[in-house]
Length: 148
Image 1 (cartoon, rainbow, N blue to C red):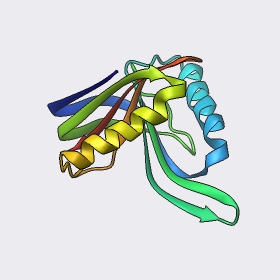
Image 2 (cartoon, rainbow, N blue to C red; image 1 turned 180 degrees about the horizontal axis):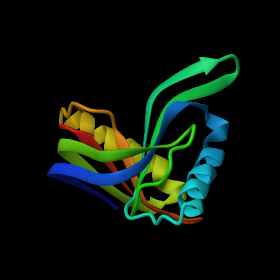
Image 3 (tube, rainbow, N blue to C red; image 1 turned 90 degrees about the vertical axis):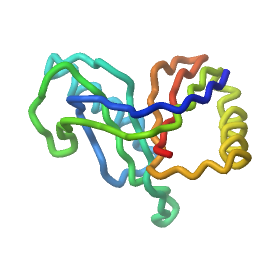
């Protein structure tokens, strides 16, 4: 299922944040470390996992991503070398594309979304962010959001 909705804005507060270059194969380790930082400080997630790949580059045989990940949490936590606190995440005038699908058909859904964007001459004015609500072994529930 794909649902397209224009919204005035998207806004989250008090986020733990990471942004840096990372090798693609190290992403799962990054997610694990993010969870350890949150849980280790007795904080609770209070919103979706927000991520964005700003840029890709090839370094030898490895793919590196300029990658950003954020999660709203219920309290401030101490800074680490990799993670910091961000007061607010805000994008004004957005297209929110809500996707609920099986992991096996997610790529097909993304092709349909790209076709919709082309056919409707939509020009994103910001980076594209993924707001992951649920990701289990079978289903993905995510919002793909960018400023318009």
